[in-house]
Image (cartoon, rainbow, N blue to C red; front, side, top):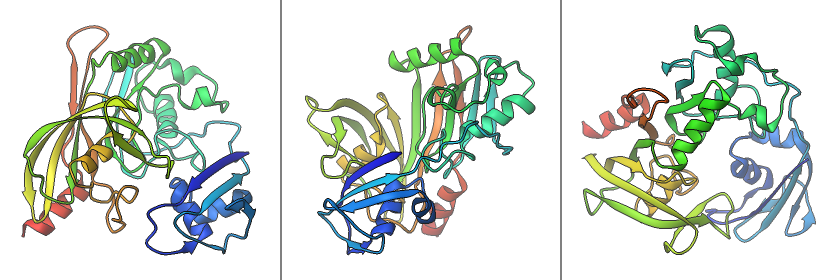
Length: 309
C-alpha cells in the first residue's frame, strides 16, 4: 500500500477531492488515482471522492500498490548527447519521469535507457546484463542525479557500479557543474547575483519547499544572470552549487518571481514549466572534463517569439 498525507493551501476555490488528489500526486491522473484507491479521509473522516475540499483541510490517502514484477523496456527515440563505456548522457524531455515511481512504471527515462543499453548502444554495459526484476535498487541503478518530471534537459547516467559511485562522489564533492535556463514571469531588480539560503520542506504543504535562514534547513547556493528580457519576462541562466530539491524554483521565489509554468509554486496553469538543464560539466575517470550543452527547447522559443514581436 502507498500512503499519502497533505494539508491543503493555495487553492483559489473549493474543488472536488479527486481533482485535488490528482493535482497533489502530480505523477498520476485522476483515473489512475481512482483505480488504485483503498480509502481516503478528509479531516480524519472517510469520505467519497466527490466531496469538495478547501484550504485548511487535511487529506489522507491510501492507494493499492501497482508496482510491476519487472522493469519494462521502452523503445523511445531518446536523444543521446554523449556515451562511452562508463556513462550515458541523455536528453530528458519535459513530461518524462526520471525513474519508475508511483503511477509511472513503464515510460520513464530508466525504462527508455534499459531498452537503449540492450538493443541500440554499441558500448558494453554492465547494467544491460542485470536481471530486470523490479526493486527499488534496480529501478535506480543507473541514476546519478535526477530531474523533475516537467524539467527538460541534460541528465548523466552510469553504465556500471564503479562509474555510478565515482559520479555520486563527484556530486557530493561539488566537482560537477550544473547550469539551467529558465523563463521567469517578471523583470528582476538586478541583472545578476547570488542567492544563499537554507531550504526545507513546508510544514503546511509537504509538496513544496521554502527558503529559510542559512542556519536552518539544508544550505543552498545559486548564482544567476539575466540573459535578456522580452515583454514582461526574463530569460535567466542559473548555476546551482548545491543540489537541493526544487532549488531553482524556491530561489526564483526569493527573487520575487516564479518560473513560467510552475503550477506548484505559482498559479500558472496555462504553460508548461520553462526550466531546462542547459549545460553540464563533469570530470572523467580518465582525461579532461566533459562539457555537454543543448540549445533552447521549442517551448522556450515559442514564448520568446510570441512576446518579442
